[in-house]
Amino acid sequence: MTAVGGDDLQRLEESHREKITETVQNGSLSLVRVYGQDGKSRLKYLARVPRHARFTDETKEALLKGKRPGESFRDEVVGVFPELEEQVTNTSNQGQVRELISELAASLPDNVKETREREIPTGIDKSIDALLPERQRPGRKVAHAADGSAGAQQ
Image (cartoon, rainbow, N blue to C red):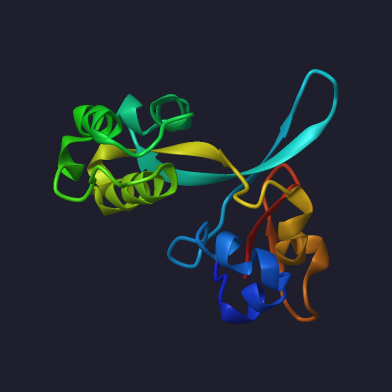
């Protein structure tokens, strides 16, 4: 979807709006429906994320899970993310470190990023329904790809 703006985002539930807003990049949101072998589907979005493995969700989870603030936690985090040496303290908790890692990832130049499928940040597929083409407001058109699937909105 292109030209996603404030009016579109206002159609979202207030409790989901901030998280979904973060998925919109330059007025664009690319959604992907992924089907499992069981036939169930999950809605994901495409995001530009750092290529380096230390920024993957799995790596971050392994680094942070079950850790408490302290010198060893700080040392472990700085060992993986030396750029955060000045920001991470012995009192930094998982949430604060997770936020610092996210800020670091967002600040990286685009040439060290790649496009990857990401989970909808609310964890609820329906939280984004109000933006989908079939839920459009009158007068808004959807361009269709050559295969007949809905593509970019105009």
